[in-house]
Length: 345
Image (cartoon, rainbow, N blue to C red; front, top):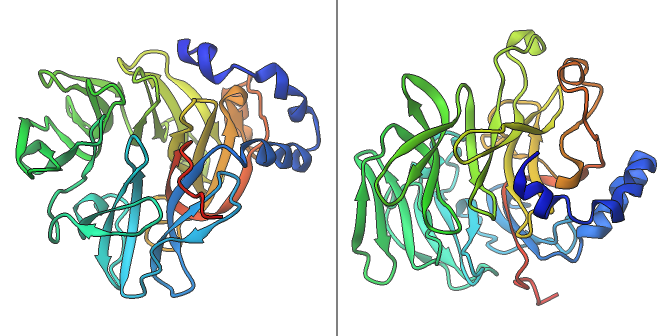
């Protein structure tokens, strides 16, 4: 098992294990109640004005509110700063279709308060591509076609440059500031989740073949990502995307959640590593081009879990816990903080 899972994610399992023995709907309701007061999530979703807006809600889906409500724009992919005093996101022209593989190159980068106020465009169309926060929130980590650039937010000056070494999307800095993770071509293998040293650019594969949307776990030692194993017979041999986790050096790969009939994306751990949030969508790509996908939350103590009947998955992963999964609403790229950013309720 993961070292950090024993130390953090699996803490408190005994206290909640009884919920998994209850009927599925009761267990999911108990899980929802358990996470309801644990901070806030921000995500993008279709609003009543038919465009993509940003929403803030409790991690059980309650107290949801539209924090941008801009009928003349499409907003996507929000992320809290490490101290949650700001969020960054991409703002696109109205009617622009969000590309689930290219969204980091789309639109302009905007930074606002976590309630959506004081929104300021940092750059123009296509500038600061794939921008994400540094570990202290003082810099932006950007993935350009010519390389990786670290930009000081105060001065807009580039303070560090590294070759991208095949990384082409979803670049994120580890919470301790020592590493990057991303999706790239590595040793002639496309769609490989990789880890890069921020100090010298040394690269290693985390998981090879049909992997994407990596994100750091709070311990800076593990990476959670989506993976579509190539040995699946279901879905006409195409298979279904699953949620996995590995050590940063690529060892100890473990299934977190899978469900035949759905592609699992957007994996993101709670700040204390006790829970994981993800989306599940019948169409590959996570629903960015349409209305998003159903956002879900589960306990890491219940990993690995398999949803639905999923006979092929159950045959390959016999020892699963199959705990409850709480379903929220449709959204895309949820991000979680325990800071009290929604205190206006």
